[in-house]
Length: 288
Image 1 (cartoon, rainbow, N blue to C red):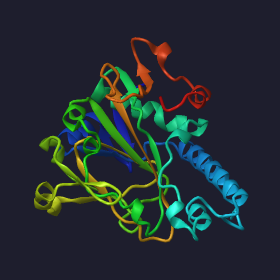
Image 2: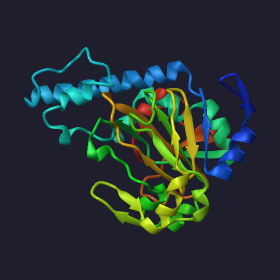
Image 3: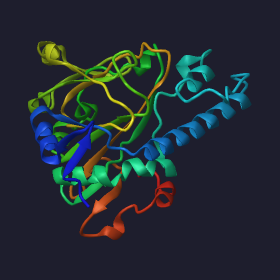
């Protein structure tokens, strides 16, 4: 059964209203979309990934304690506290684990995406788990358009694509929530300049619009969908814990990815046999 009306915080919001907001402002927030079991599966996978890091650090004599009782909000920063610059800022290839299937192939989410992209949906080959460690400069993502990170921004701008982002912890200004500048997706691909760790939108394009920036504060279970041309950034994390989040993308599967990787079919009404049907199948695949 497709989702026609979403019940979020006791307020009925139609899918058409969400997509209208996406068209006008460049984003929409889908509150309480993910079932708690999906969040729990993700957290369990992250715990295992961090455990693997801990065992490697122990084997390499880079830590004397694996901090096994620390939660995921703390453990990675404890493991790397004496060499923080070596801490991972993202995980990509490692996401082909069973616990990520319920997010990337979430039926309710795909029902919404289908109304935007059509009946053939590709999980775009760019999906990332990000641990934003407090006060770590490499975790400070500057104002950018996702299309700005490719050498063919104008071509990417023509793709029928949506970006998705969800937190594994409550996100706010203190621990580094995202900020958007609504409506900027209508400007097309704009120039970016290289900074130490990331690109940033050219000052002449950015400065006149900063006054319109909004904070995107979310809870676990919330998903924000936004345009790949929307101006956005991640605030610094000034809290005492890691801000874990996931970002991924869906593409109209009739279009090319413009990458060497081809992605994976999330939904196909014409060839359902091509879909990734279960978590075991997902875990057997790779970032291709």
